[in-house]
Image (cartoon, rainbow, N blue to C red; front, side, top):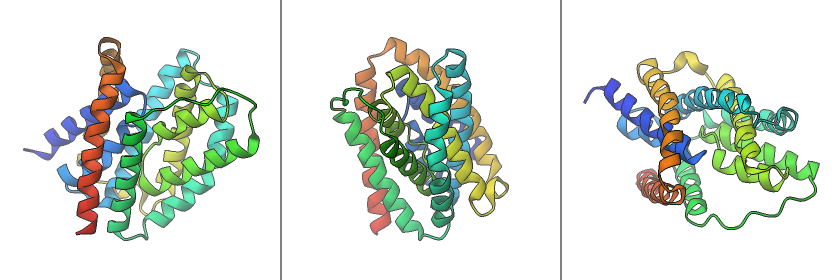
Length: 247
C-alpha cells in the first residue's frame, strides 16, 4: 500500500477520534507515524506536533465562533507551559529513541486508563494561581517531550483547577494545545523544515477533515461506547510500543 494512502487513512482515524471524543486522538498519531509510515520516534514526534498544531488550530476556530474559548485565562494557562514545552522539545531530540517510545507508551496507557475509569471530577471551587501555573507547566512539558496535544489532560485540568464548565474547557484547551505544540515544534532541531512532507501533509489534511466527521459521529453514537472502544485500542497500542522499546 502506498505511503499516501496509509497517511490519509491514518490521519482520518486520528481526526475522527479527536472529533468524536474531544481529546486523546492525537496519541494515535505517533504509533501510526512510526509503525505504519516508517518514521523514527524522534521524527514522528516532530511530525505529530505539526499535525496537532494544525488540527487544534482549526478546531479552535470553530469553538471560538461558538463562544466556547476563554481567551484571557487560556492565554495565561498556555503561557505557563511555553518555557517547559520549549525545554522539553529540545531535550527530546537528545534522548534515546527507546526512551521516547517507552515514555510515550506509558502516557498512552495512562490516557486509556483515564478513559476506562473517568471517575468523578472535583467540584468547581476557588481558582488557585499556583495550581493553575503548575498544571499549565506540566502540560507544556508533556507536549514538548512526547509530541502529543494532551487534550485528555488539559480538559480535566481546566475543569478542576480553573473551575471551567465543560464546553469552555474543551474550547480553551485547544488554545493551550495549539500554543504548546507550536512552541515545541519551533524549538526542535530542524523544525518543520526537516519533516517528511510526503507523509505529514496528507496526514494533517485527513486529520482535519476527519475531526469534522468525528463531531457528526459523536451526535449519533454513544459517547461512552466510543470512549471505551478507543481506550482498549490505545491500551493495545501502548503494550505493543512498550514491548518494542524493551526488546
